[in-house]
Length: 274
Image 1 (tube, rainbow, N blue to C red):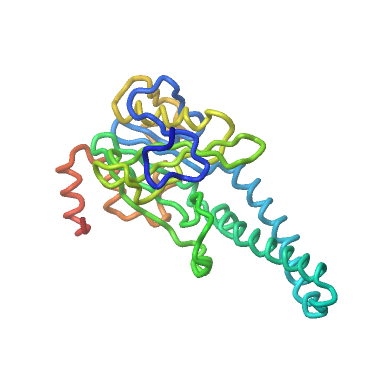
Image 2: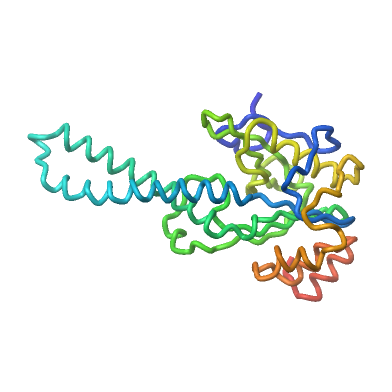
């Protein structure tokens, strides 16, 4: 049975159900939580270092391969040495495509926005994202965006319009990622995507999906005491994770909004366009 969300993502495994969930755990991703909002990091340091090293190795092997291939092509006669010519062309195209894939991965690990936090306010039903533009699962990109490596996406979403989908990356390690499909209100038509939990083995990422769902409906299964920063250290959390990362002032205030009217007043105060 295919995904009900359109267009369907490549590597789709299944759609994730919203609401109360017994498969739940914040694991080590929960940065901060209080009665209004919770914060999860989506990029952990060990993964950042690992993939950063993979990218460096790719550059070490890929760039010299490209530089060597060009002069070799100039020296070959296609008519007489067609097999060698085609082989080098294939190697060159493969190396260029590999670098095209590695550059975004390199950027997102070099500019991780302190874990690329995602914030859920359960009283206003809003979700806030601050992430490097390259922190997603897309492959095809406009090469001109590579000239803006620190470009960020900072947005507010409605939880009601976000729906979870699990995908795999075809690796031999059976890694699974959870993606938030941003749909048009009241439809299954996708207009945007958010990386909720990057590739991990098995159902690990589904534990966090379950925890967030329980939190958003005020269920006691969302146990909040395991956050990195205790509830009474909100100022310290904001100093370490939020400050200096480009979050708009209105959004920082909106984290703690308790009603739609309070949120509207905050936006009016800062003249935020709806």
